[in-house]
Image 1 (cartoon, helix red, strand yellow):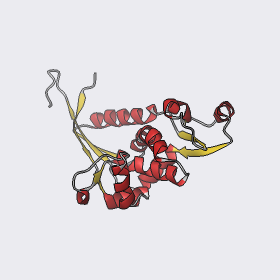
Image 2 (tube, rainbow, N blue to C red):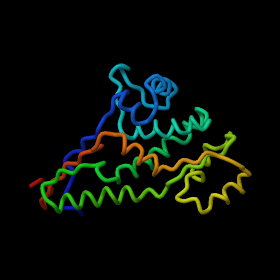
Image 3 (cartoon, rainbow, N blue to C red):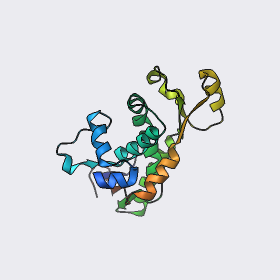
Image 4 (cartoon, rainbow, N blue to C red):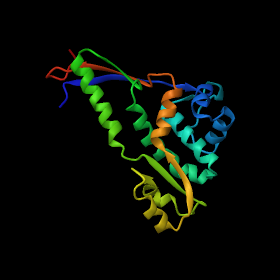
Length: 197
């Protein structure tokens, strides 16, 4: 058991304009996607705020849309792809600031974050084109750790072309455009009775 615990996590939020600068998705399209259920509903459009995972999802949906993927395809794939890309993003230097009451607490929290980021083995999303009607139940087979066995999937599916998105590249793109840190973790030492020092 860890001797340290996170007191709180402060997560960055992005305005519609900031999200547009990072993801390439303008506020008009953001509203359209909210109405279609692709992004969470927000009360008061003027005060739209997005979490980093929502900005990552927008970035992925923008790439899928540019590739000709339908709304149904965006619904099927973008959430899971964004989860993996966000994990990779949080592992990049500067994404998470740690305020700890000791060097050991900071090192332990940094190791926990890096472990979480490394846990996501998915790097690529392969989307066969033209789109198929039965993809929703088979999404996992289109998420790939590497490209070594992609030819088997293409042969099995009888697909000659598709859209390939590198989730690590998406994470690096968002990292380069977003104001850092994306999260701040405040970590304190825990005494044996469970109280903070």
